Image 1: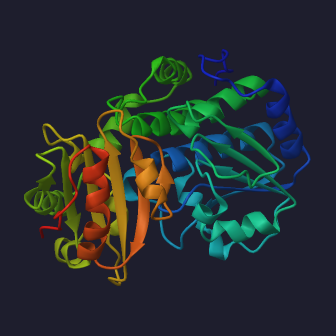
Image 2 (image 1 turned 90 degrees about the vertical axis):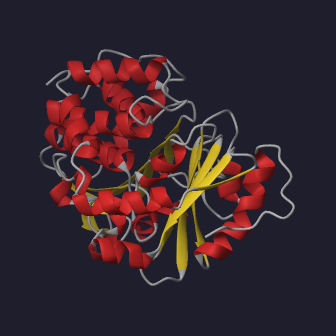
Image 3 (image 1 turned 180 degrees about the vertical axis):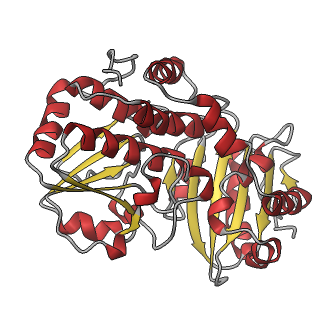
Length: 349
C-alpha cells in the first residue's frame, strides 16, 4: 500500500470539496457506486478503485458496485479486483445513504442507476466531462483531466486514504484506456505523472496491456476484419466510418460489450481527421455511435445533437433508427466539421 504523494498538476479539486465528500462518506453506512451506461475502462476502474479503497479504510460500511445496465462487466475488464461484485442497478433494492457517480456527466447516462441516485440520501459525482448542470450534492468536475481515475487518485491523496496495488491497477486501467494507451490528445503531463504515481503504488501496467489489448478472442478478430473491410471515407479522406450489424455479432459469436475497440480500427486510417463507428443494437431498433477526432476538431458537439456527449476528441451517442438512417443523419455534420461541402453526401454501405 502507498499513501498519495500529492497532486501532479492540473486544476486540482479543493481540499474543502474533498473533505466535504469525506464527511458524506464517513456519515454513510450504505454506499452505492456506479458509472455510466455501457461502461468503459475508466468508469469501471474509477468505481472499483474508489470503492476498494473506501472498503479498506472503512471495513464496517456496506459498499456496492452497480452497473447502469442490466448486463455484465465487459470481458476485458474482468481481471480488475472486485469486478465480479458488480450487480445491475435494477437488482439493487436499497435506498443508500450515499450514491457516488463516476465518469458520468448527466443523470440520464446513469440509466437504471439513476433511480438509485434519486433514492439516495446524498449524492456525490466525480467526472471529467462537461455537464449541462450538476445533479449531485457535491461534485468534483475537471474537464481538463484525461480520465476520471485521475480525480479518484487526487481525492484519495487529498484525504489520506491508502492506495493499494489493487486500487492502483484499477485506476491505472482508467488512465490507460481513456488516453488510448497515451496516444490521444489528452495524454498530457498530468496523465504521465499520475500513471507514474500509480505504478509506484503497485499498479501493473503490463497486466493491463495484456488483458485489455493483447487477449482478444478469435471471434472478435474475425468481426474486426469485417469492420475493417467496410471502412469508407468522405471529404477527400478526412472522414472515415464503418459499422457492425447485430447479425455480424451473432455470426461471429461476439457480444456487444466486446466492441469498444472497433472505433480505433477506423481511427487508424491515414489522413483521417474524424471518424465514426456504428454498432446496431441486438433488436435492431437503435444504433450506438462512437466518434473520434485525431486533431483539434470537437466531435462532442455533434454527439450532443443526438443526445449523446463526451469529450472533444472522443464522444458517443445512441440513435433510434437503422445504420443507414444514422449515417445519413450524421455524415453531413462530420463533413461540415472538417470544412468540406456536405451537399450530396450519402451513406455507402
